[in-house]
Image 1: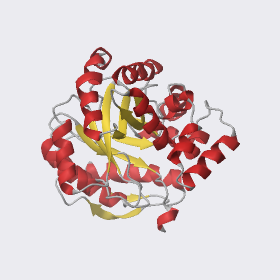
Image 2: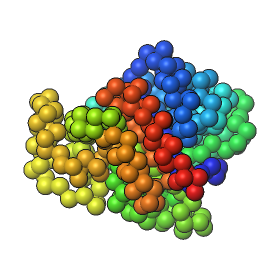
Image 3: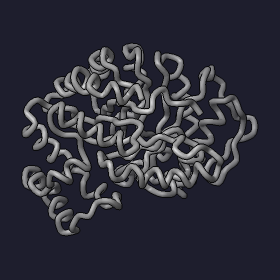
Length: 341
């Protein structure tokens, strides 16, 4: 496993719904700032991760690049390994590979590879086997003939593995095999020790040091000098996924009727009405929203709870470029002491 360069990191993530020129422009925009990683996420039917990452790689000098995350139900681990090796060949500051079960697969006639937890475990093992030059793999889900090996140049260093999940079983798998666990759609400090306990099961099982696997918290971010407009925009964005993720967080108690009402408003595209049902407390748990000082204080709470990396997801601001600049020019410098510790 590759050690983290810092105990506290900050990254930025982009959805893969852009023109090729837009990926290049975003890479040039974020490159001057001290982000530790630049991620893309690619739920169906958006561009698969590695094309956008390849476009961005020539312009990202200081941050590692990676997908957060790939579903083995969409991309076979044989292809993940090949694309990861190619990206590693051009990424200037390293890469990582993120795996997750995937979302909204059935909506696109994609059958989830089952059993799901075992599929993630074996996908990680297949990729690691191929990228270290091994041959063959024989599992319950994936079976590669003994002569199958990577025919392309291999990365000089092991590529860190991230597993995206809220679940106990996958967290335990990550504790055995991965470097990080990402809790997607959450900015809640209270869930961090819960996830750490889940991960520790796997760490103990394999004799790894407790806490060796970092927790990554990532969610919608809307940052602007006009904090009230930013928070209102974030409420609208959070309404889209809150009915899904709120039930995954054992530290959050929300009335089922409230979630049902939010869901109905979203289905009717009545986003202002849905946003009105999201309290300040709920917003703080599932998004990064407000001005620079709001975000700095929120990050400090997450780091204090044990988070290793914070990832800011789209749209970043009322205007994306404005939000990114506030992160780069105000938030990152203010958190420099945390990131050095």
